[in-house]
Image 1 (tube, one colour):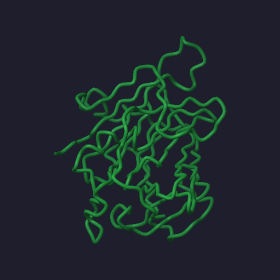
Image 2 (cartoon, rainbow, N blue to C red):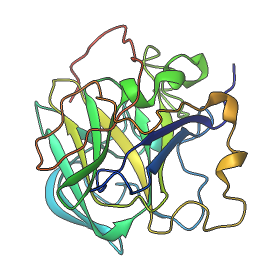
Image 3 (cartoon, helix red, strand yellow):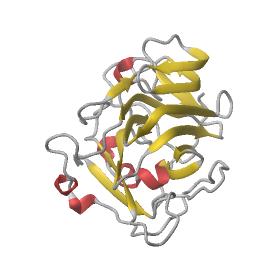
Image 4 (cartoon, helix red, strand yellow):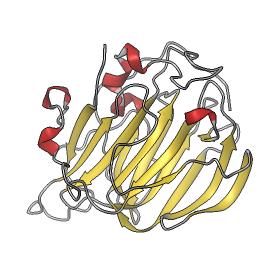
Amino acid sequence: MKFQHTVFHLIAASALMVTSARSAQTIVAYAEEAGRTTSTLSGTSVFDFNTLAPGRMKNVTWTGVGTFDQLHVKAADKWGGAGGSNYSVQSYASLPITTLTLMGNHSCFGFWWSGADTDNVITFYSGTTMVAQFTSGNLLEKVAAAPDYHGNPVDGPFRGMNNTQAYAFVNILGTGGTTWNRITFTNMSKSGFETDNYTDRVAPYGTYPGERLDLLPSNSMKFVNGVPVTSMMPAIPEPSALLLGGIGAFVLCSKRRRA
């Protein structure tokens, strides 16, 4: 079973909305085809962790994009490492939260999410206001049901391992004026939030030729019309935060310790 550009179309009232007169803003999230570890978006900047030595570090610069407050970088294993190279991980046992502070307002972000589980949380902020928060449970629901996305797809010694969990490159797009300037990656359990190939763009979706929402496969879209929906995990406390998530659950066969 092949799902090309499995799409989740999540719509919620913006956290920036101060009166009911303001129009709803939109977050569009979709997965690239199974096995792909990079984004097909144009005009992006990519951070792949490959120039960093494995270990923990602070104040890492992504040139032209922003700064990571802290990172835990690991060498490729069955849990992560696109292309068989380094990747980032968050875990309560090592480093539970990484914050990427961006240089201004950005509209597109993507990442390869490997060995996804429901303790993995990615949150987007505009200032101190939460714009959106996702877990694998509310973002990868359809991917979790597609066998082609299960198991490590990277050629090499780890290919096919961990076949009870999803591996997918996810693009998250702000439309209708939706932007963010800070992203947090959180995992407060002993499992790991493994990611790679961070992909960023300031320009909103639709800037480049061929970028049209109506060209995304509508039969796999999910709509949440104007209603904020609580995600599977509690929000990291922030003032004036609106919690945005999807619906459904990603049922895991097992929990594991690995970071």
